[in-house]
Structure formats: structure tokens, C-alpha cells
Length: 87
Image (cartoon, rainbow, N blue to C red):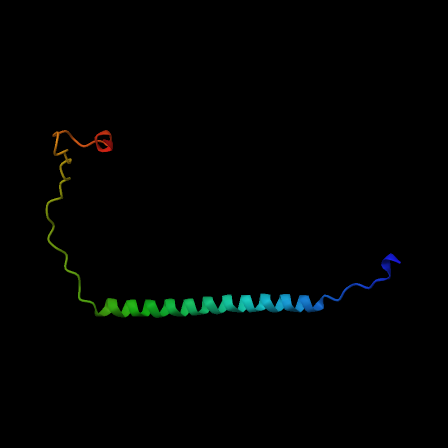
């Protein structure tokens, strides 16, 4: 009585699952292909731009830049600190 029922046929779900998985994988492979193709086109364009660009002229070496003076609070004449900013 318990085991007289047959096993349900789920082959349709299996086929649907494999179909969905195949479609997702095919879209992923196509995405990688198109990204690679676009990357190669961008690299070729950058190489062409580099060949046709005028050379960069480097300015004469000048004195090293000095650090700017520490800003001071214009009201009290004291150096600005974290505590003075919070007020």
C-alpha cells in the first residue's frame, strides 16, 4: 500500500534546469568575448594616439617647493588646531 505509487517523472524540470544553466553560461562567455574585443580595440587606439602625440617637453628643473606656512586663525593670531576648529 505505501510503496505502490510510482516515482514522479521530473525529467522536464531537469531539462529546463540544464537549459537555463546553458543559457547563463553562454551569455557569460559572450560577455567575456565582447569585453576582450573592446579592450583590444581600446589598446590599439591608445597605441595609435601615443605614436601620433607630440613629445612631452619637460620643464627645466627648478628649486624644490617649500611647504606652505601653517595657517593661522585670523581672529586670535593663534595656530589652528583641532580644538580651535571645533569651537
